[in-house]
Image (cartoon, rainbow, N blue to C red; front, side, top):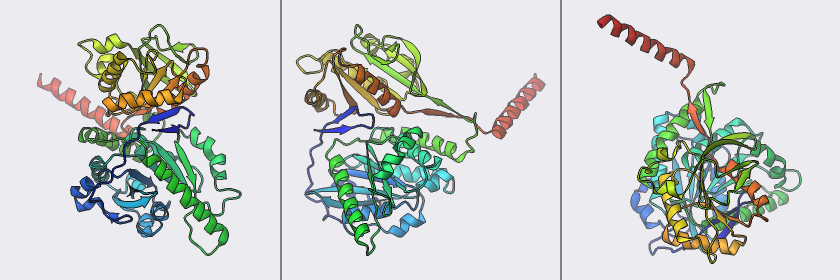
Length: 460
């Protein structure tokens, strides 16, 4: 079991997946390409997976080579870019093997220089390769030491939010910091607030340099960067993986296609509308939680502001889950949900009550927990070790449930946790964007409808 500190300081508990190396794993530090067929993925399916993405030229290949301690990835590919293709490299670190997935051409697809259909096809190949393996343990978003732009936010949303649904830990790696004044981590201290303002939150970060020159200071920084990156990979490789399946892939690809249309549009005001929806299931109706001033989970439907955003909440209880008519997300009054929140009743003997576990499983299935982040609040739990034991017990019986588990102490001690829970909802909630057609297309559609109506009248 490992404890992660989320960017909102809420504990994210995940169960360790045992690391068992298969008998036919290739030698360490041997590059492996998914184009060799599905057999390669099946052979190495127990190897943890780290996905690395970012704009062309930010140094993704150099990051892989620095982690591996040798040249595996061709850095010229990162400089030239391509059509959102990927390569897979097996490296050996700290007596364990892991796979580093090098994705390229992300910004090509979002800028529209690569046809959306081709970008979607290549993304599907990447997702299927990951589905055949152990799962995804960490996403690394690489950026350069440059001014923060909307393009960084666009790529963050397209890959981490749209494709991986904020279900996987994400780390920011900033390259090109060999000449940073003071410590390299100073960049993070100076820019973290700006990243949050852009709506980008990370579970971890590393400020590094990959430059290999004959300079003692830069070489020391490079050595420190290698150590930092390796520790990051090893730490997250020991956590439970997030796994995809064909049904998830088939649902995500159309969303990705829509997102590509949005990012390639002009983005003028009025062309898009953000939707933030939260579905809450509270198993203890007599003890509502206040996660926004004056707003509790006993409401059936309401809106509230958290930070600078407005959220629409739909509240259901255990009885709603048991209704014979409750079979889909629409049955409980929600579509395009951004995050699910499940409150347990008070723990019994440091365990989640069996009825709560059954309700969580139903809630996860009905409310589409596979496709959006899930927060489980352990009411009456003020001990991290107890929270780990509770989650381990649930995961041992329901491995498909993947969630952020939050210890929630008694009411007397829980006010600070309530505020942090609000921050967590704000950070994890997926904003579903309604894409409106360009004005010219709207006029064309209106004219087409008018012509059809006139022809219909002429035939009457």
